[in-house]
Image (cartoon, rainbow, N blue to C red; front, side, top):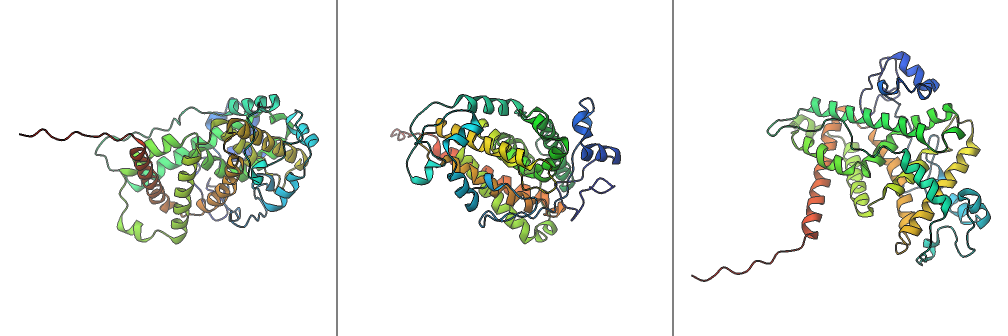
Length: 365
């Protein structure tokens, strides 16, 4: 973060962050987490220099996602070799010998069973840490009002600020908060905040994003100059975001799955500068197994559901990394295009899903 409060590096981000030098120092030193009384007055910023790899190649470098949470080939082979004893260590329950990691890869459905007690406890704790209430940023526009590019950009910045604040509050409520240092939490959030925000918008806040925010973007008409200046990178991000919104709409990720996905994505032991990598890896595996246990218990007839939702994480990281590098002036047009396409698809889906009404023929005169 630069002294003027803008993200550093390539100077690309969701938007400007209104934050003083003193507050920057408090956040980056970890003091922000220790001061409950002043929490509501602060926001978070971060540079966008992470080199996010494509989800297609499964390669990660630097501040990249944990292999345990991306189903990369090397970690998949490693996890497939874990014994029931190790699984018991992570979720605290004995496991039958036939219950192997990722049984979906062998093409058969898991048998109906009970959720392991420890998994239920851990998931309940994760969900309790979430702020699931609707976003408080005002997004209601009176009919007939034309939203300008500057106004829409300012709204996007306010939404980003609120979402960032919710992530900071979430960290303090995590069941494993005392198991890692404040410094490690600072590094983790600095590296993953954009991914956490995107995941939240695709899941728990999707109805509000595709509803209230889409209604605002509908009232914004880009100029010819904006349309002509939209970059190829912006087009790529737009297509990938539309794809992700549609994919998550089909998956209908539950709050429990969302909470697990978020924790797994956040607990990334590959981030540089962490002081307790071993503990971080143990936590990552714990919630990986818990998420698998829950999906197999809740959706026994969807044997591929767990790998499908886990494979969404590298896609989110890839798109989040590209999104923060889109020029700021192109963000209003980008969000308008994405939300318009997703909203249209959703309306079409609802129309096709509604029961058809057969009208009788008009009476003869």
